[in-house]
Length: 296
Length: 53
Image 1 (cartoon, chains in turn purple, cyan):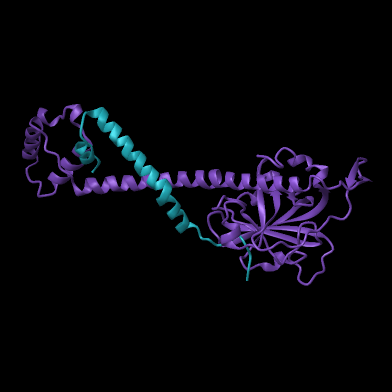
Image 2 (image 1 turned 90 degrees about the vertical axis):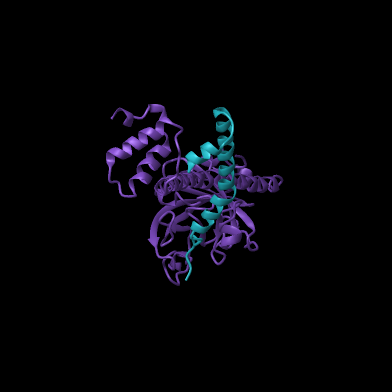
């Protein structure tokens, strides 16, 4: 029996798989005899062999490791690399707007008394830009709830290849809907997972959260109001008064649509907001996003 | 399988380890550069986050 106890340094992986697996299979009649043979073999130069079971096991382990590696890579790639790329592209776009508007005169605001006694600068009716060409960048969106530095370029149309899958943009504007600041519904869309995980946090919005849209004309502040889980064909959310057919809008709305649940696309989320105020670029960015506008 | 690989590698242990590390690095590079993006593209539903009829 002593020869059955392997010396510790002889316990290789192939011992575990091959000696047991391969030698047990063809009619293991004499257990004792086998041990003797084994022991005898070990004393001399060990003869290694590869068993099917052993290789299969190693392949399974390898496959498991590869899947884990892929998941790790995907997280790092989507929410790390691509998101950072979209963010810095938005910063560049934002800087472009600021550079263009450098020499424009600042409109004089009127002070409006708020119900709580404070005064607020009012710049009047917001300017509305004309619709840009397809896939053209025309705005940058900031949502502090998605991250203090979170910003994305908005391009015209919701074309998958040129806009939504773009590593430089990520957000698309439904071209039949209103422009920022226009009476009606400014509706935009983005992937929630994949291609930078652009709108992955839409479901985290809370009532009153700010959604800032920066264009060449200024900053438009919208406030998140409510959210609905909808079917992929629920185009009613794009109506100029969301969800109300044939209504004539008198207010300015914003609608964000994205996929739900994350990593799948059976449903959509629509997040609705209402317009609060606007200010020209020369007046500086709203306080909440002052640190992230025009920079990384 | 891996046992056989280990025995096939030439040289003393330290050389085997270095060769192994290089092999792992090459495999990882190929995975990250070609294989993972390809799988990622296959997995993505490519359904937009948009609503449409």
